[in-house]
Each structure stands twice: as structure tokens, then as C-alpha cells.
Image 1 (cartoon, helix red, strand yellow):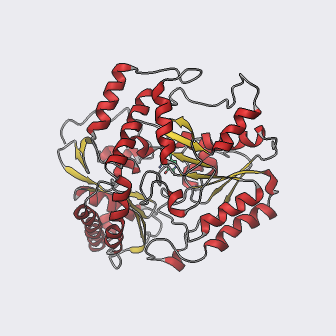
Image 2 (cartoon, rainbow, N blue to C red):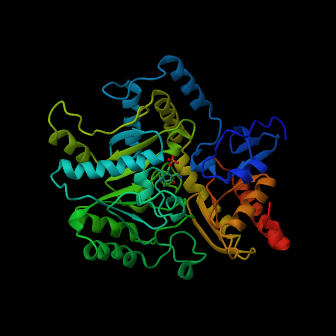
Image 3 (cartoon, rainbow, N blue to C red):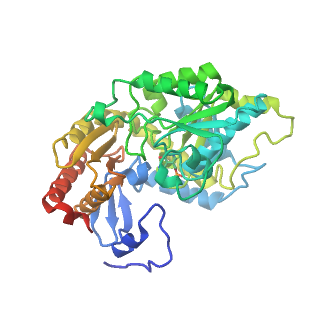
Length: 449
Ligand code: PMP
């Protein structure tokens, strides 16, 4: 391998570091739908980086906006000062949001957005005279980043078990995955949505006092836990229950935002408007770290009208909130979304994508296939005693064959850039089929890299 750096010092996040260092997978360049590895191999990007490079890699429009901004105003203090581009970026983003969610708080990531949203929800109830609304509800298998708020409402045990107790006053409701009933369903599961949502009502009225619940946070489509889709009617019913009890509904749209499901936000797809939406990732096409929280105007206005004049209405924020370079990248990215009609493109490709994903039915080890928009999860039969090992081996084989896929637990997750071509979609899934067929031929040996 050429130009291998010293691997001693960098501790990679969410990575088996010792395994990685025995087989480093390093990229040196990216353009369009492809990465170039450090040893000059080309990899088709089946994952849009980490769900973030929606407009394809190396966009000149973003590069020049960022370079120009760095030379003009590299940084402005985020507190008590700002710069015009932050207001412009907020206005532009508000136009992408469902109607009414037009007040924007900027953060530096999806995790920061989750914690910001939870804090806004708690503070909102205080500012409106309901200080007893302290509890936060998330879901099993939910992922809301890695900071303590998001980790606490998140429901992936493997992510939290190393870190103590998390926030108090948090509860979780069931996730909607039901493979026994819905294996190989194309698109959304049809049944069980209302009953599952009603469990939320039952839980908050029997185990809690609903007047103590501040917010429910859900990913409309649970990505990190392995592409878990909401059954028809489920999210709408959650909205009704939240309304009934004065509970704020937060949609974490960090991966479902910006066209992934074929609509601008998942909220548009489901016709359900939450009180708060979090986003990040594709907001800057992954080029510069940035997240945002969009809040219903009434919620924002409650802070403005119920706090003393000259008071800091929300004692929360980051040095890099509304960073000028991130704002420049976001505006350039939103321009690309509009000019290249990426959301429409995503919607137009989703039928082909669905067929390609479901062509894996019958391939060895494939236990379930779930898809929506340009996301698919291929769930594999787990190897006894070695959860995730087969998916990891599949990921490595695909990597060797020139296709970047992602694995999470026993699920291979596919989420290509929205600029993907049909023949590239076909290649991604045929590569997975080939990898699994090879694995089956190799038996257990194939799983030890
Ligand atoms: N929420 C969701 C739904 C996510 O998928 C992610 C990242 N995959 C996050 C939050 C956290 O984002 P970040 O890694 O930018 O902190």
C-alpha cells in the first residue's frame, strides 16, 4: 500500500481500531459517486459517505463558496454577534422545511442537533409555565447521536452500555420492526401501525403522568439501527397522541432530510408535521460539519415573548453555531438541491432502487429486505454467537470488489448519493449478491479477515 501514514496516533470513532490498523481502508480523493483509495482503487460509494454526500462528491460549487468565504470572513463570534450569511442560510433552510418550522438554530452536527432539540423542548415547557414536563421519550433502536441527551433517548444498547446511566427521566417505546410479520415487504409495512402507536399512549398514561412528558423524539425512518420503517399510519397517530397530551414531537431527520426518501423531508412524505426537526449531514453535502434545528414559529416566539427584554432567551449554543464557512457550504448545497432537482431525482430512482434491492431475495443469508426512497437495509441471518460478523465480512468483500457499503449489526445499509445512476444502483446490489454467494461457498472461514 502506498503512502501509508503513521497509524499510531489517530483513535477512529465507532471502529474496530486494531482490526482497522491490520487492514487500513483509507481514501485519498472523491469525485461524483466514487472514492479513490490510497492505493489508487476506485470505489463506488453506496453510502453517500455516512448518509451525507447527497449531491455527489467534489462539488465545485461548494468548494468555491467555502474557499471564498474563508478568505472573506473566516469566523465571527457566534454569541451576541453574527454575520449576514447565517441569517441567509437560516432563511434558505426554512424554505426547505415543512411549513411553520421556520425558526432555525444552527449546530455543528447531528448529535448537537439532537441535544439542542431536547433542550429547547424542556426549556419551552418552562418558559410557558410547565416546569413539571421533564421527561423525554425515545424509542428502542433509536439513534440520536452520541452526546448524553441523544444517547439517553437513543435505544441502541451497544452504544450506551459503556457510559453509565445517561439522563434520568427517560423512557423508550417499542420500535416498529417486525420481521416475522413483514419480511420482504416493499416500502412501508402496511399493518400494525396504529396499535403500535397506541402503545405510546398506554405507556405514558399508565407508567407516567402524561403531564410530566416534555417530548417524544423519533427518527421517521430509523437508519442507524438497520433501516427500520414506520408502518402506515404510525407517525400520524403518534402526532395525534402528542397533541392530545401537550407533548412536543421531535423528528430526527439527520438522515431522512434532504431527499433521501424522495421528498425534501420525511415529514413531507408522511404528511406529519412535528414541532421540531433536527438535521445535519446533507445540509452541507458532508463537506463542512453543520447541523440545524428547525422549530415551529410559535415555540420560538414563546421564548421571545415570555422572557424579559435583553435576557438571553435560550442559554445554549456552540462556538461554531452558524459558522460562516458552514453557512457558505449550506447555501451552496441548497442551491445544488434546487438547481439539480435532487429530491425529484431521488423520487424518480426509488422504483428502480426498490427492484434492485429486492433482487437479493433468495441470495444466501438474506433474511429481510427493507427499502424506502434511496435507502435499503438487507438483514442477514446472524452467525450464532457472532453478531454482525457476517455483515462485516460482506462489507469487506464488497470493498475488495470496488463497492462501499455500510453494515450495522447484521444489516447491510445502502444509501447512495442522490446523483447515483441506475447502472450504479444495479452494481451495488449485484456486488452484495456476489459477496454473500462467495461467503456461503467459503462457509465460516470467509468470515475471518
Ligand atoms: N441522528 C441520526 C438519526 C443519525 O443518523 C445520526 C448520525 N448517523 C445522528 C443523529 C448523529 O449525527 P452526527 O454523527 O453528525 O453527530
